[in-house]
Image 1 (tube, rainbow, N blue to C red):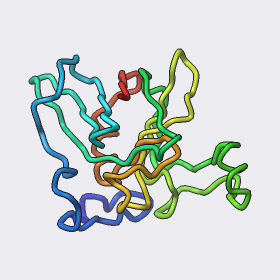
Image 2 (cartoon, rainbow, N blue to C red):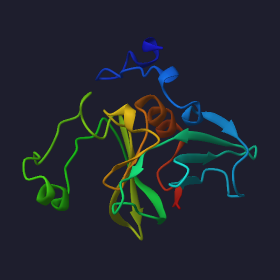
Image 3 (cartoon, helix red, strand yellow):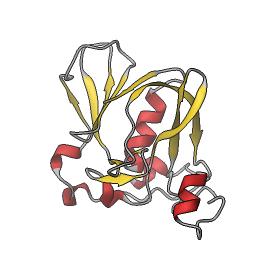
Length: 171
C-alpha cells in the first residue's frame, strides 16, 4: 500500500482500517437518491460522502463533519483543488484559539491533509473544504469547524475523480 504513495512529496500514513467502523470503508453502493454522474452528495447525518458515477452507482466514503454549531449545508461547486495545501485558519478560528499560527505549511501534520477541494458558491469561496486529515480517528464524528474530513488515502482517490466545477450538495 505504501508503494502507491511513493511519489507523494510528504508521507501518507496508511490507516489500519480494521480499527474503524466498517461502515466508513470506501465502497461502491446504490446511491440514496438519483443525481447526475459527477455530483458529490454529502450526508452529514450519516457521515457519508457519495460520488455519483456514470453506471448509476456511487462511491461512498466515510467522513467527519462539522461539530455542533459549525455545520454547513447547501449547494456549492468545487472552485479550486490543491495537493498538499497550506492551512490558513479563519479569523473566527484564531479568535477562539489565539495561539493558532497564521499558517501551517503542507505536510503530514497539516490539518488539511494530502488534498483539498475548495467549495465555492456563486463564484465566492465559502471557506468550507472537503479535505484530508492528520486526525484519522475523527472519521465518523462531528469534529471539524464545518469542513468535511476524509482519510488521506480516500481524499487522494476522490481528488483524482472530481473535476473543478463539480456540483457538491451538503445535506
